[in-house]
Amino acid sequence: MFAILKTGGKQYTVKPGDIIDVEKIEAEKGGTIELKNILAVSDDKKFNIGNPYLDNASVEAEVVDQIRGKKVVVFKRKPKKDYKRKYGHRQYFTKLKVKEIKV
Image (cartoon, rainbow, N blue to C red):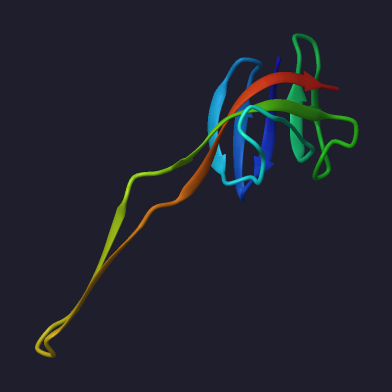
């Protein structure tokens, strides 16, 4: 069984037991959250597609950790004008472990 869910503007294909990194969700480490934006669910016999979401489906996940991604360096430069600017960015992520897919 697997599900396709949408969170943080991205879509993820998950199965029970998978660990995924999603955009930051305000939740306590070790807590449980329920994700409702399910686009499709498939079991061995049937494939359900939502329009755009399935009303009766959800994914239950455990918050494993709140982490930050790798640093992305942004460097701007304008030739012949002596303009340079360098800064970095680290994105916040939530690491989730999928417990159960409910239909």
